[in-house]
Image 1: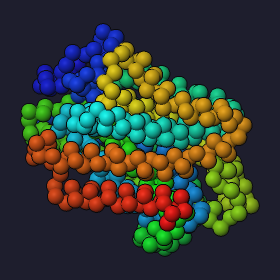
Image 2: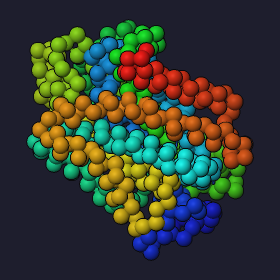
Image 3: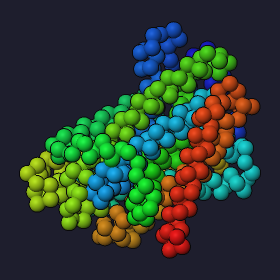
Image 4: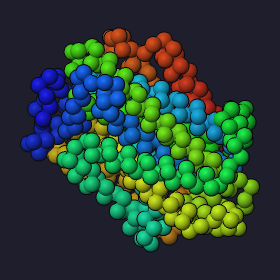
Length: 462
């Protein structure tokens, strides 16, 4: 039950009647909205612990299986040069996620709800379609990654692994009943598994430390080399994922905050941002480790390392990675891949629900709505996997393209976010500071220009 001091969060819970209302006045993810109490007069660390959790759910999307292919491929093809792209992408992610969280906390609405309310019907439908396609692109990497991990670990056929992964919606329904903190704890545990697996593998791969740090300095070759730019934008799309902006603006509202108390709102914004930045720093480390692993082990090799199976096999092949090759390395890789895929599909399902609710305002039983949103995003992936059954190389070839599409879709989420958080009437004193607003607009403009340039190069027009 929500406390009496958070009455602004208390609404008639339609889920008690078996119907989930998503009308204009409904709360974002209203079954968990404002459900986590926070201490009133606690010290810094107790307060931070209370607000810690949503950042992990957001951050896990920044280290999903789509990142693996683009980051490891970046390292194996261009050594450490694209570390600078990971660094810049992570800084952009921190800026945008802080804005998304602030939007949700201050307004009590998520980005999808506000976009639908403040755009025309045609524009709203267009943005919903783009966002749904981004969810599909996201799920493509997560589901295929999880399905392949299950095959590597247990020998399941890829289609069976994909079907098992798709059923995670049932797990999410159960976890929601246990409380949102349980979901946060599970996802944080899976993130820890991913971090320690790759930290171990990078340490034993003995990367060139001076070259590694030099890689964080941007180079003009990234823009002038079309194949390098393609992969760089894939890394941007895999790191700064559009659905995470919608997710962040929603789950930031899981803490009980009295919006009539400006100081309490400011405290919520402060600690949610700290949590987000800490967790995104972990995601930055993981993505760097992935690229460093690709550079240290696979740069200059002749093997085809564009698939998860290839990477799994390579880690156990002394001809490719030398004396450190071991079945244990391969097994750890598969375990981390499964952890990444499963944690990402949980947050992807939540994102799908938020986007569906916010843009088209469904009114149906919660279990049916969550199943519908999941099927919409999963069906194309499953159909493609069935059509190319037995041709895993073809299935996995979609992954880099899906991440590049996410980069192209990103401005369609960034523009409304920057616009809304810069609106004094909507945000009051919590509107973007001048440097935040202009930095966000500059980043958006640069990303659009790079995307257009990539499309022109792909079509042979540049």
